[in-house]
Image (cartoon, rainbow, N blue to C red; front, side, top):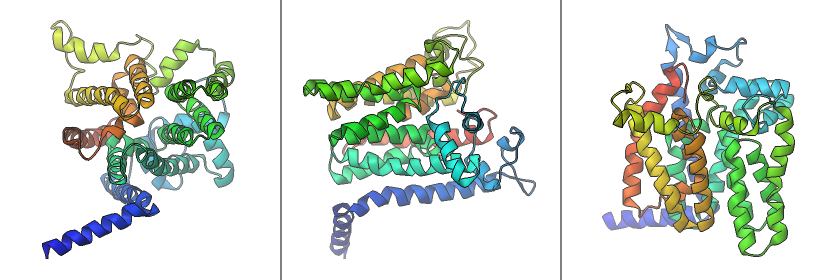
Length: 380
């Protein structure tokens, strides 16, 4: 009986992994989790018999349909406002607001457009990541890595709510996938989109450029510099800030008021100094930051370890990790480092230690993140 059961499981696995339906498995799982999470969040948001979220009292207009509040958060109002005005003098880059504006012309609802883009692109990023993973590991391990990445709380949350992370993730993944397929022009187009979505989106050209240079594809190497020119031409004329200030503030989109006070030492000030200095109170170093620091250390290790997966992606991971660590504000470090996609290629099924650490951090961050995001006045 046990032997027959093993045979059935083996044949089932071969059937799933042997066809294109293997790309559907993460989509079904994540859609089910999003549905359950939305229903749970809705139930938790009932106060005195009335559906209520922290965002209902912050915005001047009432959202219709009201269930959209489940997928809105603090920065969503900025994206929608920029989509209305098409003015990019604030710290957010124009990629996501511009797409909201385009879709809103069809659905006649900016908030619904913001939700639809983020939700759909978050799903679309999964098969692209899985296809990339299959270039570095077998199909079973690629499927496992995709599931681990998609269910990590920060990836799960910020590709579900109406934020720009879903567009950024899909853009960088598509850039590298198309580059691996030797489709230079579409790859550069996606890298331009990544650069117009996030400050650090432009870093995806680094592995593409290095690969082209090592292969002596000079025309292709020159083509990969296009995103830098596009960002300079499109972004800078719309802002009165100097470049360094713009880059710093955009990385700290949730912390406008404090991001100007210092540069490049948030992690040092808030993690290291309170531990080794008795003169500074440790009020800011609570248990969330202890677990956040553990994940940041793990992310740094995985960024370096990704060199073993692909030296080009390793350089990209290390560069992006350094940029986030230097410019990112404390509450955003885990969020930003989670979207360094090559680190998830290190989570092979045979890497027992990495999987164990991921399980622990997953559980802890699930509890902390949902509590912080749903009930704190300023989410991470």
